[in-house]
Amino acid sequence: MKTLTKAEEEVMQVIWKISEGTMGEIYSKIPEPKPAYNTVATIVRILEKKGFVAHKAYGRVFVYYPIINQKEYSRNFLMDFMHKYFDKSLKNLISAFSENDLTLKELKETEEYIKKLIQKKSQND
Picture 1 (cartoon, rainbow, N blue to C red):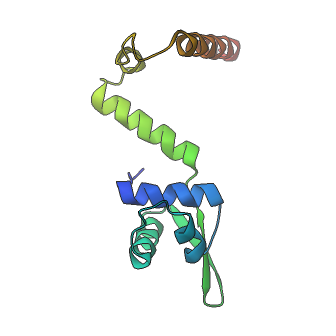
Picture 2: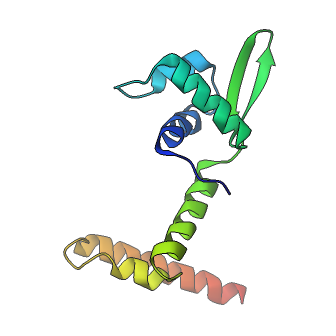
């Protein structure tokens, strides 16, 4: 899967949030400081070429919607990040967070989540 630039990701976040919308609707949701309207329109066209967005035409009005969902993109982004920077190891990724970065509550929540994953995996194998 192709990756997004920072500007593309910002526009894509808006499109994911609104599910579908015209250029005007997309532009209105871009946070300040907003780039020029034409810049956002160009980014949307780039996203369409990259296969992240498609549109439906209603006369001269285009309504854009995501083809790639946010969860799918996030997962692929994180897997790529983990492979590039943490030797393909989830353990190395988690250990990058020092003891001071995670609260006890966060650690316990993570532990519970992992226990549920282990239990689910055990039932499926």
